[in-house]
Image 1 (cartoon, rainbow, N blue to C red):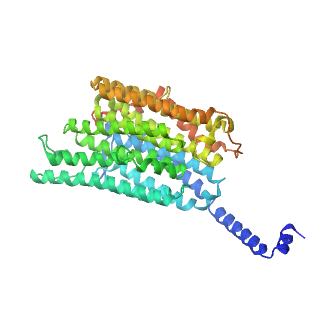
Image 2: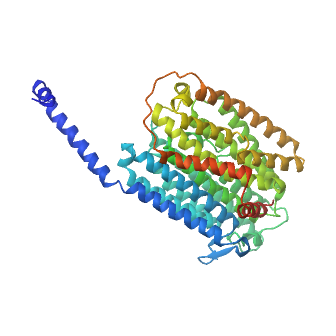
Image 3: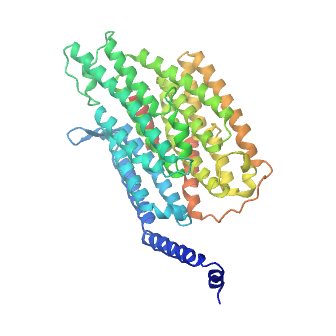
Length: 492
């Protein structure tokens, strides 16, 4: 008599339970078996998107840009081209990581179809948004990308991920509503002056005035304030740490490295439109939001005991640095563009590596993870490199970008911004090191069994490290020209 049947004889209720368990297992196996093609197909589509982006980059010199499509509602210019290349490169890495994890994680395999569909729809919306030549269209596409991302956030392993997803949607709706109020204020400004307004990026400047105009300033302030909330700038940053922590690893990387950049492009479009209009007003608003964001990030990082939330607050800090650099413009603009591009790869590297640590230790808390370098040598080393890149160590691109931003601030004569940025970055450096370095190199507190890691899992992370080193040491001339063209378009 088998062990199962003996148990069933001792406890008659066990027989149906065992049968039910076997049935559920076989159903799960059949379901998983029926979806084994999804993640390879997702990687293939991501590869096609990346090849298409690189093909456009290599075959369209800057002298041929801008190119307009769809009755001028879409445009391929330096800004859209740069970020299309960046986000599709990041997306390819995320898809390769998801493919490698899905093979060993049944919970991922069970919902891989809907997850892949949402990710592809999210990327399609973002790619179109990057090319949008109409502010209202861009605004609408950012909101659609939020609707695509919210179900992905709800798949997280937090206590109540659905509540987090709802709050994420609520915050997004609020910030975009503020942005829409800005559009209405600009329309009122044009109406009072008897001017017809068009929200085409290349035509809106025709309806602006250089004379003092309260409605125009109100519209500009609302647009920057609302989009600043999407970037995680204070004071509307509250959604970001909670969402990034609660969301699955791949979703956190998508939000931090892809959706963040379409919001950056929206801010760039506004700066391109208002170039020569209200420069001082724009500078002051960005300066204040940058100041507050750096202070908030420094305080929260000092108090953080959760490594994923720490990365999220570091994203708030990065947004503050970007705002300070944009407030100066001119010499700092190139550094800002380089900083944004490098941060896309830094954030992805950190979140994907954090996913490996979460899978092994089962927690996002720093305490139990002491001695990660010994338990997970590869993941620990990659996380260390990501932290060094985040903190602006050479030879990573973030070091060069921060030096260029600080140099631009000094040339602009804004010693207060220079001092505050240096002090806050120092505080963030010390607080991050105090939290993360014992986690990486301390004596192990718990014994865990690390499942084997496929070399495929390492590919995207190593690729991100290689890109960061390349951007910080030697940038190919075509890419340098593209970065410079984007910097010039925002006042650099």
